[in-house]
Length: 389
Image (cartoon, rainbow, N blue to C red; front, side, top):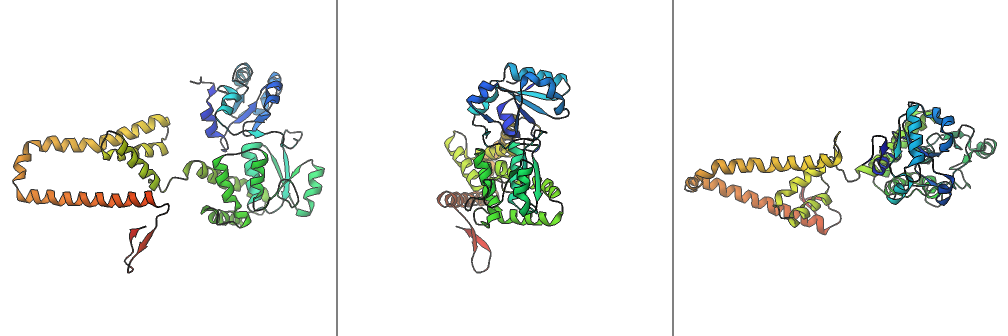
């Protein structure tokens, strides 16, 4: 378990790519870096032996220090920074643990040169719409959080790139540009080795820039939001700052919310719950505990996620079974007397028929969603949706 000055790999990975991510400083030795010259997302590479010269640059910022194994170099730098009043943590078990768990790693052989302020400098055409906001977002969140972007007339991109030692992107004929139907965003993820399912999903949405609205349902809405955003700002840098939030939102959806449908279970999750109930010794009603488990998982609030899901499942179990047992014990002495009451017996028969109808409906619903990949509603005689197929 990490100490109060350490952050685990799983915790750090949840922060990677977010606007609230800490500054990651790589202090691996030259020998360790040469053996694997990749960096954690948005990490800076600095010499741990000269921490006294650069510590003040990170005043007021959250910092995570990464060395090869999370031992002397990173712990020493963390202690130094904390002495300077900087909120610093050590990455538990270091670079090796991150790599072992399959965390995103950035290829450094593709990194452009940095300026005197230790920033990468990028230049592209003015009046961005989609790709020229998408790429800066990707670079700021995963490559260089302090990257500088210059928006200029299309005819001046090449000249200014040469004059300012900047990297031109999303221009015809350049290395950092479209490749076939794939956007510059795709090119950038490939060049830096950023391979992950959330970024792949986001790349499909960004391809709305090439009029491929058929790839994913979200593309059309994303394009509309991007074009609307471009009409709201005359200043390209103001538009970029506003656009970063749009991409943050879509990235979080791609990473955490693709299965969420208005806070209710998706059909596949319902089938999972049924399978869980059928393969365990408990009753079929245990599907409800699965619902409580998922609800707590999606909204743990300030609780530890593991504690939240356990409490959610336990609370659902209590709410499901406590009333049943209460009425069973309360009515047990009167069962035999009630059997002779025709009115009560008729009511119980009606309840039994209703329960049977619910069971048939559930059987049809689960059967359709297991057999067919897509299920949609249709109506008959304009009555409205009465069946699903």
